[in-house]
Amino acid sequence: MKITLITVGKVKEKYLRDAIAEYSKRLGRYCKLGIVEVADEKTPEHASDGLERQIKAKEGERIAKHIRDDAFVIALAIEGKQLTSEQLAAKINDLGLHGTSHIQLIIGGSLGLDPAILKRADYLLSFSKMTFPHQLMRVILLEQIYRAYKINAGEPYHK
Image (cartoon, rainbow, N blue to C red; front, side, top):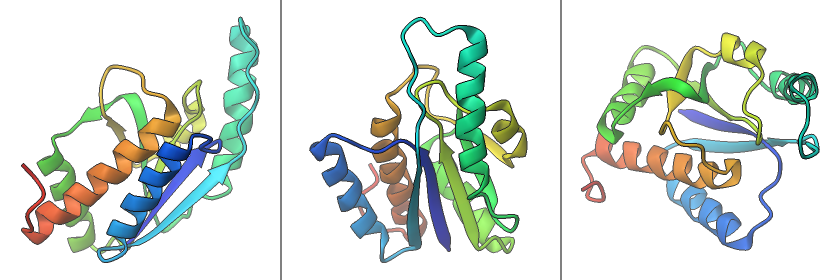
C-alpha cells in the first residue's frame, strides 16, 4: 500500500520534524510513505472572509495538482467522521482488500481546506471537533496510521 500525505506548509519546529521522521521510519516496514508539502499562503491578521476564501483556493489549487485519480483521497476536516483507532485500522485494511493501492491523506493549512478539495475527497476524516495546528496534525496522523498498521498486524503497541 502506498500512503501519501499532502500537506500545506513546512514544519518549522525541530521536535515535530523529528517525530515525523520517526513515524515515517517506523511506517517503512508496512507501507510506502510519501509526504508532499505545498506552499502555504501568508494570512494577514484580521483577513476578510473573501481574502480567506482566496487563500484557501490558492492552496487548494496547489493540493489538487498532487491528487491522483487512482488514489482514495481522505481529507482531514472538522466536519468529517470521527473514528476510533480500530475503525481507522479497519478502514485502511478494507481499502486494501477492495483493491485500493494508494491512499492520499490531505491536511490543509491554518484556514482549512478549500471546498473544492473537500468535494473531491472520497472520505472526510475528523480527529476532533477541536482545531489543531496543522504541523502537529501531521505527527498525530502519522502516529495513527502507524497504530493502524500495528493493529492490523496483530502486533503489540496498541493499548
